Length: 566
Image (cartoon, rainbow, N blue to C red; front, side, top):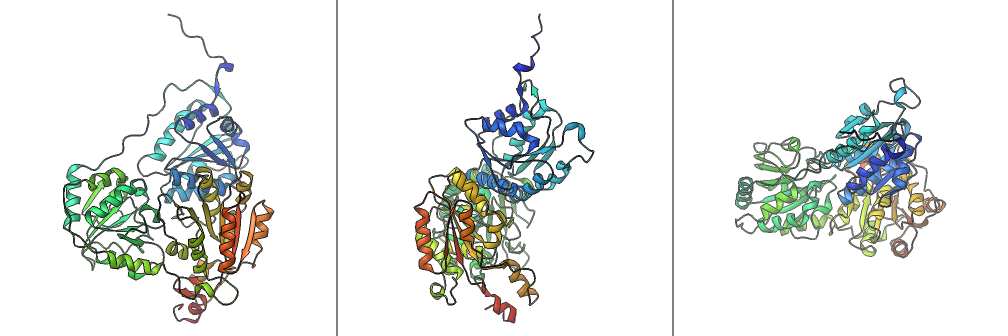
């Protein structure tokens, strides 16, 4: 037998090209990045692929937020890439967001050359150690011929079990090396675990026999929205959306009981407090969703409210509260099985609980004619309701302004909310850019405060360059409102929360090639939104809001005077 001739260097392909083969083969379509010298061959290989898009952003935080938003919207990972040291540091905020939001993401981090590792070379950071706490898996590859294999494994890790980000640090001399094609790659995505028949029957009997059953649905149930509706209707169970997961269940459905968010109204929580069966589906029961780890209350702590939990990740089951039954299963498959269980359930009247939630979504009667030449925050949301399509993709930032949006905007359609459960400021504008790339024919709206807008608002230039007519609505009140509220309530005074203003944010948008409008009345805002829907350019609308209206239930003057903020 004759040995096959050795490969000539000219016949081999670069490690970067092989990595891109793996990414494209898995259905990954975009890489968001600020280009860096330590991964030149990777971005070149992506640029040369007809079925992939390289998106150059203005800051690494914008790149990581965009990758997170695309994956949240599609369920498929996107790529965020950054160079060593400063670039990797800037990228981290969006990776942490992906971790807390259970969003799949593939992160490539350029690193110093192999021969320089461990010498504190220029911009060197131990990236594996840095990224390990905020990813599902972080690794440094030191052989070019292993890069394709590690990439395939990264996709598998990011998308199985509880999804999340994976970080691969690559020394700058590896991507350009020509290497033989990999002989084999890790296998495809393993099958999602179903709900067993015995578990299905136990859950079905439990829900059917309960007096006041409710469901808490998290991001894991997004892919099973239709099945969730069927289960709710089959068992006459009320449904709560977990923190910033409001699009998981149609908000206009009579069994929708509201959003378990910050500052949740006590009337909205009543049905959860009174429930004798709480089924948690696809939710890790975060601090906000549980109202400070208080609800759902386990049996023996004042309210007899036994809990069952369905989750893809066994580590999440029973982590926050005791459960009488924990099931490891994919939410969609579990809900479909439960909806077909051969039991009948009595009718339960959740109309009063639904009305209690609806009452919290209504703006005060005087919000439309607010004195002082500033908009009431409620009036901004009301204008959005009047003018924008109800299937708009709404990307919201962190900040107190969001409390009005969470209550006032009704999420009737699937995958229409992009919001960080991590509370990361600066998310909205980059998220809108990614959403418009994914859904070019839908209206995409970023909603932010002036603080968050000036953290990543420069990504409006990215939107302009790519021809993406996103709409950015800014609640400009001249301060870091969330911190101002906490200081006023807890300390009786404020410090460090003022932002110079009012700033000409419309002019800022125009300087980046976008359109800009400044509004201080509902009529001006209605017109600005309508105009934004008819243009091919991104538009920033600077809504000047009253800084005293700090939340739906409090004013700054009231908090500072000690009367509870009313």
